[in-house]
Image (cartoon, rainbow, N blue to C red):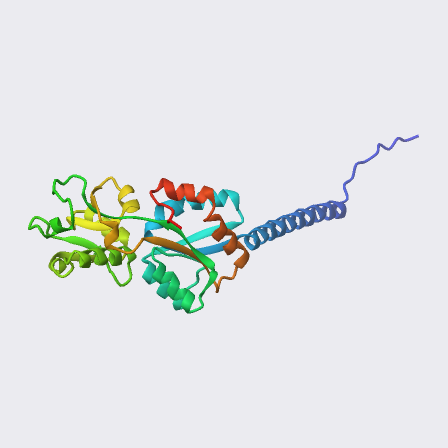
Length: 279
């Protein structure tokens, strides 16, 4: 009897089928994985709500800290801040610029939006107070003790915010008018687009003195407070916060508005020198 050993032949058709099947399976897995990733990213994007907050420049440092604190509490809400002079921000909102909340450094700018029915009177209220001071370069030795000293020959330039759009400039003008010095100082006055620019003028030596809020003075090591302006010579500095009617996210905007009145938020503002207005 002749013995025929078993042969181990490989079917080429079967091999090709297995390879093709494996490739198709891998491709299918990649498509499904990519699709899921894209869907998850899209879902995440849909879940994130972005709020635009138009805020007075003097609130910059405090709000930047609150942004981190609030973000940890509400990870689905992203806060975008638009800082500037309250008057300029008011005009932007009047012209239809997107904004969910308006944080003003003066009641008149908020009142203007309420009158034009762009902010609901029941969703705005005064939250903070501040104080007007005159600052000088930290490394200078110019002796200034009061407004009359600004007329001295050694004082070449005095920085003031544009009174028509910058509340700090408006308060400064009030105090100088009360002291009968506004016209006298016109030849040496330089105007800033907001209170932070006024601070920068003094920091860089482009002004010998400048009118800013106490809170702004406390943020810089390059300036020092020469004196506090008599609070009786200008209107009370109040910061009203309000929800803009045109917001596309009323629920989230009102939640942030409420949070900004909370003790936690007020403690942050106090850390940066803001006071709570007397009721």
